[in-house]
Image 1 (cartoon, rainbow, N blue to C red):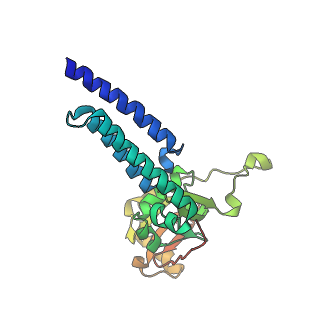
Image 2 (image 1 turned 90 degrees about the vertical axis):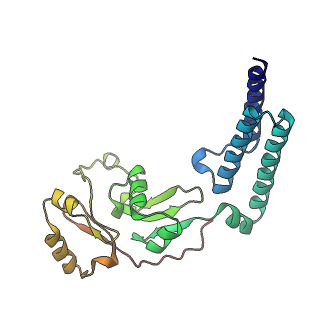
Image 3 (image 1 turned 135 degrees about the vertical axis):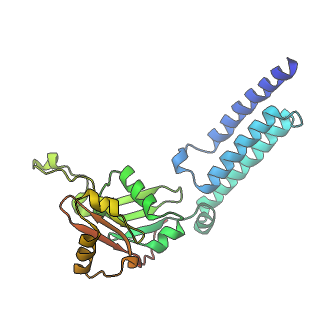
Length: 235
């Protein structure tokens, strides 16, 4: 019983001290953490857990260990605030993966994501038709920020007192050079129809296409594999 009470005491102290350390590091939301912050957070949590259940670790040793990680994090935050080069090295820098409505496969690979991840993030941000997006930027936190094309900015039809028809869901007909035949059937066509449409647009080699979408008016939006983006002005 005494050992259980002592464990509960250590756990309570660990949680309270962990809260104070995290509080001192700032008020970043979990989604805003960069990779370094994430590692520090995991390490602090592991130390607190080990301090609670491991009798070989004293309360003082656990608190000192957490303090070391907390102080180290504060030092790194100070350095990255003062030095842009340290910030790039430690926290990373934004990466432009879409520019002027074009998707860069090279930048997708650099960010370790694929076209499906980009489409998912776009939908979660309210863009079910990726052709509405002008720029997409992978932030150091891993979150993708989207800038819509001018005509898709946030002034609503209700603000303008105009009537519009519903856009519907956009179908992905080609992903990573693969023809999505089930999706083509869903919109009432077949593979041959798609190939003819692409040939009419001047695309005869499917392998050169990263993504092809089709809206409810059967308008194709085509993204090539070899788009190059080299943006260096973002921080």
